[in-house]
Image (cartoon, rainbow, N blue to C red; front, side):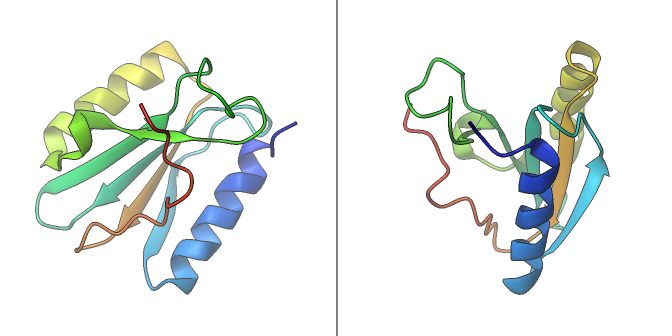
Length: 115
């Protein structure tokens, strides 16, 4: 059984703060099982985006995993906004977390899926 979305988000936001990064809940999704998207805002007009790993990957049934969007490259904020808007239309229960990190640090080490 994996952690509820709300608990994972609260822990991630707190951990980001401890690491010196500001993290915000931009969109509050379903407390129990909402998908979580993490945007790393580099504060230069670009962002990285991490979305939930496909459920078919090993380990995702008990632990949350993420994959980097855009092949792990920072993209213009408008492009990232567009992706997130489309995802919200598809899944109204999702969460969006935004982290301010000029150097692109995300704190997802150990949670990134190998695809």
